[in-house]
Length: 216
Length: 216
DNA sequence: CATGTCAGACTGTGATCACAAAACATGACC
DNA sequence: GGTCATGTTTTGTGATCACAGTCTGACATG
Image (cartoon, rainbow over the protein chains, first blue to last red):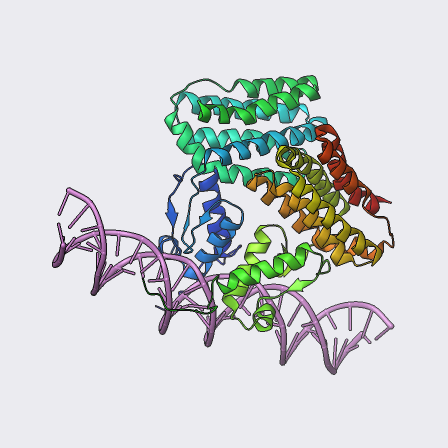
């Protein structure tokens, strides 16, 4: 088949848009743990050749978002309990630092925006929508951490979220809870008060909370 | 079963061996900041086609070891001072945690090995060999952190080292110092004494030390 | 019923090519 | 001498193909 001239010239390369799409899918928990992604499968689904599909998969694998078997097959990771605990420890280590760095720059407008995002989180909780919960919850954290002006740290914590994505979905899907996010309100309160130790504590508690559901 | 004796036919794919080679080169500071790597250049140098070379570059870029310009050219990163400070902060955050987790499992044999590696570090210092210094120094830290049984954390700190690799070389190349690593001796002493707070402090100091040279 | 076998489909890997954009060098011109 | 236009080379990107493993599932065998 001959290649058809593309009407809309690609602003960004095909492998990049595929990468970004898969990345958000994984981070938001739209893929189940253990789900396998093949080069040809993705190429067919997105009307691409194997080359850009392969690059997107390689990139995601390098970030830990996907695991590669000994024979080269890539699939969503199924995390062991130890690994989950380790990733939670990384969250508990990195996120308080990011929050602390964001605190001096957290103006009223930011706090209001966090409050609004938090209401979306609560809405997702009552709707039992796991994907929406993960998405809005991450948006809450990312909005805060963006103010830390620490791109390397932010990138690092996002790879942690990436690795937990599919497992988070599986966890929140099981759990039938309807508690609104209490820690988020503590975080917002600490931001308003300029209470740095309280902020660190609240963020740490929020990052560790997900782990507690697993162990029980 | 009767399998054909393949001498050393590709145990691991070509893109993987290229990736590992480039990775250690970058981490050890054998590449200068800003050095550009091209797909065809690497393919020619390693007698490969473009495909595996492209995958290795993509993988390293995903880990932050290489930066991609807007037009897609990849090169070794030239870090801003802010970025260096941020990466040093990540080291100061992650490495004490890894050391602390390694402490309960640090037997005498490990400490002896660390001592031996440390003598290699000192040797590299007096020889003014920047690459050897970086390599042995990282080996010292990695040997300790391997005992932490925390693969995700170890992978994360290694990406930090990766990102700093070329800049480290440039820094240590400039500096004409000949001080043996004092913090390493403190680390070993704390390990022997089972002194967890002292260990955290020594590791943190060692991780931050490199930064001090830059600011001055 | 359990287990081993085997053919066919599936899949990652590497090579090669075409194309367009970017980088570069060159030389004219003011 | 510096600046702009231009032609050439370099480079990333995507497509296509061949090859060799891997996986799957049906079937036969014990």
